[in-house]
Image 1 (cartoon, rainbow, N blue to C red):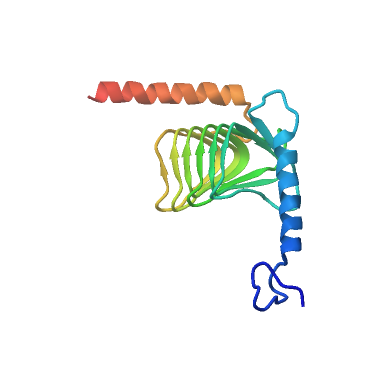
Image 2: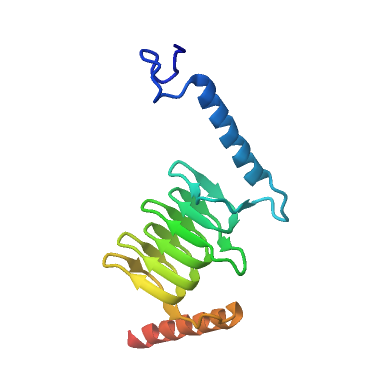
Length: 186
């Protein structure tokens, strides 16, 4: 029986052999390199290709730069940069408990159970889970907020097909009116 790298005593079938582990690591490394080496106009921008399952930014990972994706992206680690879904897609972003994003987010569907420092534009639906915190403005078509979630910024409902420029103008007017009310209330 061939000795396994993880259980040298038994070499049992549930353990990966050193050869299999290296092969899997090699496949994984080559996939990550393909994503990060993809040619784009901005060297600090990465693109996550559509696949059968979600793309995962794990807890031990920090990405600095903008992320463009299609499909499903799960953030358990840290992204310092903007996150944008492909135009016209049904992309979904999930920020898991402990996940952090420092930048603006523009996606059709979002679930936030981590921390976002930046503005969120959810063109269709956003769910703020019990541990979700947003330090910025949230623009949405449909919103769900679970007890315990927090938004430290403005909430602005938009029509489902409202163009970004019109939405941004409305957000600016909303923030300016809130600042005016705060100044005059004191």
